Amino acid sequence: MTRFRSNYEEQFSPSFQWLSESQLEELHSATIEVLERVGTRVDHSEALQLLKEAGCIVEGRVAKIPGWLVEECIRLAPKRVTLANRKGERCIYLEKNRSYFGPGSDLPFTIDMESGKRRKVIKDDIIKAARLVDYLPHLDFVMSYGIPSDVPPEENELHQFEAMLTNSVKPIVFTSLTSENTQKIIDMAAAVVGDYTRLKERPIMALYTEPISPLVHTQEGVAKMFTCIDHGIPVIYTPGVVAGGTTPVTKAGTIVQMNAESLAGLVMAQLKKKGSPVVIGGGATPLDMMTSATLYGAPDTQMNFCAMTELSRFYEIPNFTEAGCSNAPVPDAQAGMEASIGILMSQLSGANLVHDVGYLDGGKTGTLPFLVMCNEFIDASRHIGRGTRVDDNTLAVDEIEKIGPAGQYISSRHTAHNFRNEIWISGIFNREMWDNWEQQGSKDLLEKASDKTREILGSHESEPLPEKVLEEIKNIINR
Image (cartoon, rainbow, N blue to C red; front, side, top):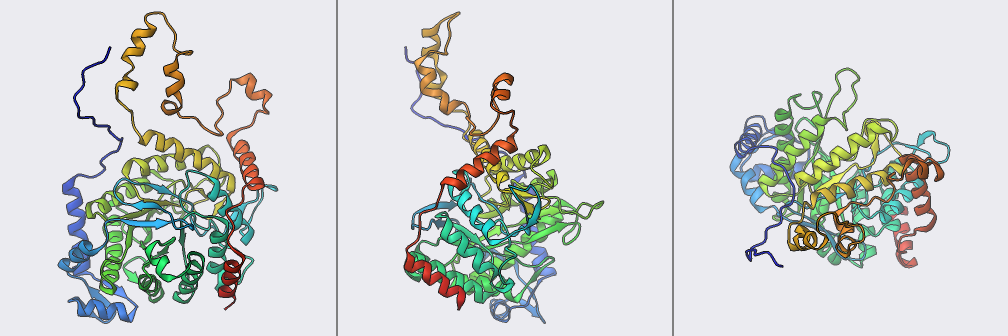
């Protein structure tokens, strides 16, 4: 028996709407008013001159940007930004409702897997994190996950990039302190892909750089962006704020100021070169007024991110946000709750580039098993994000008729063909009955994640680079 159905089939992907259209318009209007009335300080002389020539009112180092110029630059910015992996295969498409997850870049501390003690990050930790991310299927891009304490500070980001580039094929989001080091990083990437033209055609990385809140665009922050623009490298230009400290404490006020800072960067990028790929958004963590901690895992943080994501979609410009992070000092129940809620909300809101996965201690500490745990959280969130498939197969009317009253489905061919798609299967979650769980060692999730981490690091190696390329990367760092 076949049910009659129309030829039109619509499958719904779960999502939610955080702000109304009128609220988005109000946020945009308030942003324009801030840029026109208050302006923004620009410490980069070329960018300041470009703004002046474009019609901005410049008083000293403060530029007041007219609304028409902001909206013209929004129109010029690409609506889609792509990143390739180290092999030149495009694999990240930053556009509406496509979400990609990865770690962050700047943890000073890690919890050592063997001793269980908190210590400073060294370069070997970054190498291991890159190898782990390279293996984990639901982490889509690499960030360094730490600041190495055992290399010269002025070469820090060069060693970070080398570790990521040589230990993972996945796209990289990198940070840099100076435009000179940014150029060296671009040189390394060009050595890997062949030349600067190929790198421009299929960029394997994006720069993450920030304005300084409130409303300051530094010499180096803009210089790094302009260096990447010269080579066609996408730039994430987003503020990292503390609501109640560097922005208004209200959510709407935080979003307005952050948006003004991001859009000012977008304007400078488009004035430098029309069509420059820029990603907006930012980190919108509130300040805990009792402890002075930045609240990475608070519900308010995720509410801010949802609003920023919808505002980016309002402009049709890719966005950068964060999830999978926690204020818990160790990977406990609090960490699991805060990280998984953030990941799910990012998935359902359609956030594009979601970083800081695996952060603990309010962004100061990490541990590799927590990345493995977050990989499971992302998998589960993506399973939810795919929604409920409704078609002849899943409606299963014929199967229900076949089994009939008082039958069973456990031995059904229909069950065998469909259960893997219909029921989320975890790689490490505990789902055994109590007796079996005891027989298997009574391990909790962190212990199982630690075992999985050791297994991966003991067996997985990224696809190696040719010796000639490795030598060139070393020479660039040494120069």
